[in-house]
Amino acid sequence: NAEYMGAQISVSCGSTSDLGMIVVGTYDGKVMGFKAEVDTKTLLPKIKPLFKVDAHVGCIKAAACSRKWLATGGSDETIRVFDLSKMREHGTLHQHTCAVTCLQFHTDSHLLSGSDDGTIIVWRTSDWAPLHVLNSKPGLMGISIHPSGRIALSLTEVFQQKYSSLHLWNLLNGRCALTIRTPQNAREVQWTHAGGSYAFASGSSVTIYNESGEEVGTINHGDKLVSMAVLEKFIVCGGEVGEASTWSTESLEEVSRFKMFTKSRVRSLARWRKDSVVGVSSSGEIKIIDVTGTELGTHNTGQRITALCVVPTDDEDEEDEVQNNPEHDSDNDNSNNDGEEGAADDQGEQEEVPATEEEVAEEEHHSNVVESGEGGGDDEEEAEVVDT
Image (cartoon, rainbow, N blue to C red; front, side):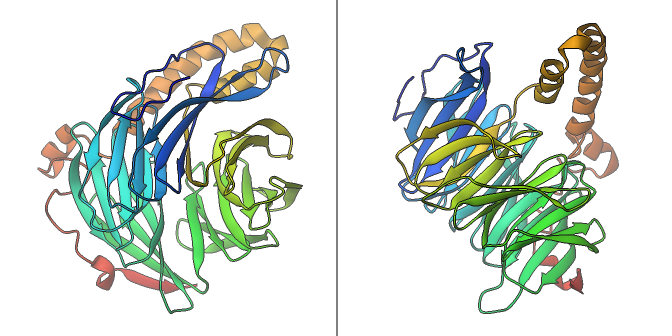
């Protein structure tokens, strides 16, 4: 374990027992990394400290990870970027002029960042150039990129009003395609894993909408919602009193309900595997827990946690299937070869979204994703407005 307060983090990684990395941001500006590895006695994840860095002046409000990159945003209006492959700080982005409240990667190639004044910036990670600026309204609370990388949702709290504003952005042309006014101030929005619908958390409930903005159904957590995690077949909700509930994305029926934290709220949730999540409390606890409420691993940071992200792991679902079906080893060996080819194809498809420089040069004569330096104004006047 290493603690380093400067530009380089010196650690040892790469053990076959490593299950992944968890990163949290704190109220006093620290970024803390933890690795989960298999405990040889219990065969369950054991969370160990990996690094700690003084990254921001003030509170960290957002954190996001891809396989290569870690980005954190804070009240100091900056984004700190770390290269996880080298375990080294990469640099600082200064484009925002208000607190950075939202961050999300699309693969390793692009980052979307949002600030309190409603500004959303599309960054290209190859040179960290700001490709486009999307102007929403002040009070930006969340962003969610569609799995295709071609569209994104942003959620804005309309102050002194009884509704929130949900914007659908076309990342190919950088314009707002749809605005939905919701009747209650909301907390979070996330696309489902397949991308055919999105979940919208507000008050004590989560409402599911399809891509056309039509309501599919609603689930009611009970107490005030603070966070949620959308998995392949489940939605996990975390509440103000530390209680969590799991719901089926197909039937929208409750699967389980359990106490995640006893003395504090569920500050944030993130996907760990297809049937488990990482949850953090505002008092500093980190827990890996499955959808039934079984605790798999825990660690107390002793810090006030304000942001959470989980580094994606390679072939985590395929590994789960192999472990759960040991009697089909030969079949799995054959399917793994096919899976590697399929994964390569999927990766190729993902790299095409957003569009590459060559594609845009041929089709639109622009640099990437959206037109650099054009548009980006408040396109809401041209967008369709729908009341739900």
